[in-house]
Amino acid sequence: MLGYVRLEVVRVLRDVTFVVFGIAMPVVMYLIFTTLALAPGDREKAALFVMVSMAAYGGMGAAFNNGSGLAEDKALGWLRQLRLTPLAPAAVVAGKAITGMVVVVPAIAAILLAGTFVNGVRLDAGQWISIIALLWAGTIPFTLFGLGNGYRLTGQAAGIANFASSMTLAVAGGLWIPSDVFPGWLKAVSEWTPTHSYADLSWNVAYGEAPAPRSVLILCGWLAVFGLYALASYRRAGRSA
Amino acid sequence: MNANAVSPAPPAADATGSPGAPPAVALSELTKSFGAVRAVDGLSLEIPRGQTVALLGPNGAGKSTAIGMMLGLIAPDSGRAEIFGGRPGQAVRAGRVGAMPQEGGLIHRVTVGELIRFVAGTYQDPLPLERILAGAGLGGLAGRRVDKLSGGQAQRVRFALALAGDPDLIVLDEPTSALDVEARREFWDGMRRFAARGKTILFSTHYLEEADEHADRIVVIDRGRIVADGTSREIKRVTALTTVGVTVTGETSWLAGLPGVSAIEIRGDRARLRCTDSDATVVALAQAGAVRDLEVSPADLEDAFVALTAHRATPPVPSPVRTGPAGQEESAV
Image (cartoon, rainbow over all chains, first blue to last red; front, side):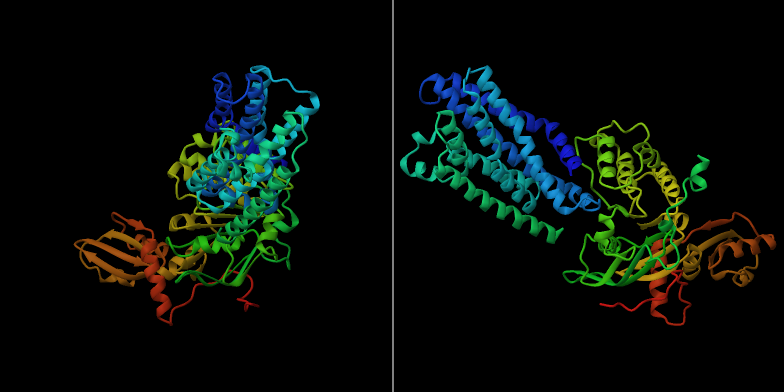
């Protein structure tokens, strides 16, 4: 299974579209948002706040991208080819999920590095470790959602569904525009989104607080929902293969 | 090179088949419908170990569906498929099967070497990369990106994936349909090297010549059923479709009495003889000193099917010889 993960990660990192739109673009957006002072508060605070927003956006995008790749694999006959090798079907699913957890790393790391070295964000070691861990582990629900779409839909439809899902979740979750400036009703919705709770954990840590239990619970709830969705999609794909 | 001709390594004891060991492939009464279409209709087939079998049939005959069930990719409506005495999925998981589906299976942004090494790595005892590359005619292409290959090269990579794990059984669904003549020749060279090591091979094709040239046994399938099963010679005799053309002057009626001739057709001074045994016919023509502008045309599959279907409809016809060691078994399910 390690060999499978390695192969899949290599494929993703050689994908120029992903490197440009999944890794480089969030960095550019981060630098634009912070230098143009589009985020609220003083510059230093904005650099920190938007660093978390954009890292969350980048990580989520990479997780969804992985799911779109799965739909392409299906169209290319790659999943069928894998079924003709001794690799167990469960190992393929697990390998694809692990791939998702690996490819989010460069997307998140690029933003954190830009925050540190370009925008001079300073946090203590404990905060960095917590933020990295939370941003990384928090992509799991999105990886599952993306894989669910990938198993359920055809190549192009999965790509569109994943793009639309990540955009909607990014906006509604307040990753682009802070939810503090949302009208009341939208703010109320936003607080229930997986994206908001995902980023909120790291915002808490960045401002020296403990992650809010409410956000942990909401994100875990979405983890369960997306996990069940991925499982249902996988079963359905298995029946029709 | 000579090592390939005379089995390079002692073949594994179970690869060539010790007596009593289950056959490489055993299909019994397999049936599969897609909607109203019955793609495979009560198909039973047994392939002993070490045999090279061609599954011959036109497009839509049910070849791919039969192969899909054989490999455990498609669940049959009824009947049973067994590979080396176990369920197909088990045999695949145990690394005893290598397969090349009709299309697809290649991914972008990896090199030929990376892809083959990965697939080989999923098997317990794969061939070394160099031997896989050589066997599939891919020498010098290990570093090439899979998405930058020509059609023929891509097909050879797909073949390489099927043989990478050094399986005992290899199943190829229309392996040469996308290849030009030269690539086809190279493909069959690789296949022959594989077969020489005592492996069992099943390939499907709609080219009669290909089945004729490369298989020990031909199983003709039409509308989901086996309509003929035997050696190339046996099948051709039944279909009686080889045509011998010769230029004759004067009396022509004697031609009908030549050995192996089943019908004659005269147009001007050109006679076309339909033959059940064209070899015998040609020898007789030569003995009669009548070889002028001789032309032997092999059977055309399209016609062969018409003939085979007709044979099925009229009972008093010798049925083609079955070469399978055991008789038909009743399905247990």
